[in-house]
Each structure stands twice: as C-alpha cells, then as structure tokens.
Length: 467
Ligand SMILES: Cc1ncc(COP(=O)(O)O)c(C=O)c1O
Image (cartoon, rainbow, N blue to C red; front, side):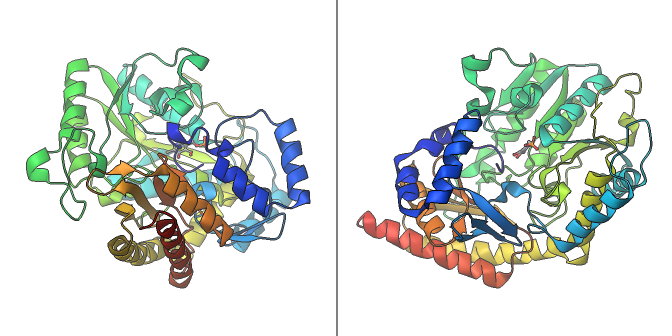
C-alpha cells in the first residue's frame, strides 16, 4: 500500500462495484488463483481477498494473469525506478554470485557503501553527518527511530498525527493515526505515551479554516493553527521525545508554507527530536530527493524504505544525526538482514539509477505538467473539489457538492474501476481521493495518456450522474 488507506477503505476489497468489475473482467485462471489465495491467506482489509492476479511487472506496467496491461500509478510507492529495472536486477544477480548474506557481526562492503551514501544524502539535507541502521521493512525502521529518540532524550512520549500511517507493527501503529491499522478494541492497548494531534490538510482543515479559490491556505487568517497546536502539546506535555510525521501526507496533503519550520522551531524549544517518515515520499517522489527539502526544516532522523530496494527487495533505513549515536549499549535495531549485501546492492543500484537517469528532475517536470492538466480538468469536471500534489505524489478529491465539499466516495470508486478497465491503476484514499503515485520514470507522454484516461472516466462518471 502507499501511505495507509483510511478507515473508509476498510471494506473496499469487498465492495459491490469491485465485485461487478471482477465479474466482467476476470477469466477462469485468475478466478481459481484468487480462490486459492483467499483460502490460503488470512483475510485482512485492503489486501486479501485480492482484486486480481499479477503475472508480470516491467517499467511502469503491470500485467494480470488474463494478459490485461495497466499503467501502475499506485505501485505501493516501491516502483520509483520502474519494475524490474535492468540495472537493479543485474546488480542483485551479480551480488548473489559474489556474497549472498552477511551475518551481522561481519561488516559487508555493500552495506557499508550504502550506509555511507545515505549518510551523505542526510548531510546534504540537514548539514549534519548521518549514521544509519537498516531493517527489512519500513515499519521496523520507524520503530528503530522511535527507540533511538527515546534513548537519546531519556523520554518516552511521542507526538504524531491523526490520519497518518507509519506501518503495521505495534509501535508503528501506535504512532499511526488510522483506526484501520490501530485496530481499535480488537488488538487491545497500543504503546503508552503516543499522543496525537490533528494534521495539516488545508482543503479540509481540521481547525476549521477556509482556503482561497485556488485551494491555498489563507495564512493571514489561520496563522498556522495546525503548527501552533503541535507547539501547544509539546509545551503542555513538556517531555515529548519526538514528533514523528510524513513531511508530505500521502493522501496527498501538502504542508502549508512555513508549517515545518514552525514545528521544527517548537521541537527545538522543547528538546524534542523531529523524525520524518519519508518511506513513500523519499528518493525523489515529490521532485526533490527528500520531500523535506521543499520545506527548509531539517529533521533529526529520517526513515526511508519501499523504493529503496528498487521495487525488488525489501530494505528500509533509519538515518539519524551522527551525534545521536548514543545507544551502543542496547540492541535496539537488531534485525537479521541488517548487513545484507544483496538488499544493499539493490539499494545502491537504485540510487545510481535515480541519479543517472535524473529521475528526481523528471518527477518534478512530469509532476508539474500533471498538476497543470489536473487543474484544467477541474474547470470542466464539477466532481473535482480539489487538486493537489508535489512531483509525482498527486491527488484529486471528488465531491458531490463543491461548496459543501461533500465527499463523493461512490464517484471515486466508479472512476477507479472505469480506469482499471481502460488500463490505468491507482488507488483511492480516504474514500474519495484519487491518489496517483506513478513511478519516477513516467514520461510526459505516458502521463498524458494516463490523464486522458482519467479525463474520460470522469466524463463517463459525470454523465452517469447527469452532470
Ligand atoms: C508513511 C509510511 N510509513 C511506513 C510504512 C510501512 O512500511 P512497510 O510496509 O515497509 O513496513 C508505509 C507503508 O505504506 C508508509 O507509507
């Protein structure tokens, strides 16, 4: 999944529209694989039972078992360099033939190289040298970051945001803010001391402030209440170890100007560390290597994952200011694949591809073309209430009444299945937001084709609604 889906998505894998799409599109081979999948896997929201079955993935494309091809504008945010990038695959194969595993007590050349490369990227972002721990998944890396912040500050509380997603582990779901992942009463108590506040999200400002006609915040009126609330809680609690957040929310919501600088200052004032979870947004997705670069607010710790393994292997990283290297007495990130040379080789090759193919720049360029086109589509489709994005993290919020901003989850689902039928895959978030997260290799022409499909589907949905 991209960032976590919202509560309202809990039943998306059971919805009548999905069933209708499956009845029309799945062949017998796919149906029987889905039946086996459903019988063999524990069912859970937003995965099993599955939508369809996949046979191939290459570049921006996925192909299902019936031979139907889709541009994958979802990809769980793992496919920045495209699926099966030849350079990544070759690096993995070569590493498998050289050294396929490293027990933790042995340094491994590839893992060291990767730690150095990410440390250098961290330094370029923050001005401070960075040190690294690798885990297999993002949720684990988030928890390493939380543990490090606790040890370094001698405090145990965290402040995070409602509606955020940080992974499925106990610690990660405790700082996350979606009940689908917190599991309500079903799972029982989560970590103590995990305070939450409402996030930024100007179009639907939880603090009640309006946006202007272009969807931009009226800062003179709102005075960044969302950031002021973070400062308020840090002050009242007085002993918060870390604020943990996605710098750009994957819904998506883009922070209002000055938001992270204000939060950064509040963290400084109260001895609190700032952790940025850049698992979906890092490595160029937003048109900068780190999404945080847009906001001029240096974090103390950054977490990367997902695309770091090139869309092939699982690897995530917690990168911290080198002076936070104060936990040597504890095994706080003791993961079996900590020094794995094969996952490290995949990550190094991924970084090379991102640099060589100038993918960060491409994400910025193609993303701004897409935003322009989506804004133009908003003029013609009354169902589009808001368009927002940064780089290739893009979203359209669908509403049945623009003035009242009434969410239109039915329209979002209809558009999703109409687009799937035409060969474009993306996901819906919060029920009514079409979230587009194409790979960084997407060309302007491919983006144009995808947006043509989306345009057609919105027209079709509008006609069905008599608009
Ligand atoms: C913001 C964010 N943090 C953490 C995670 C968890 O990563 P993983 O699924 O690799 O544990 C995700 C995954 O979607 C994410 O989007």
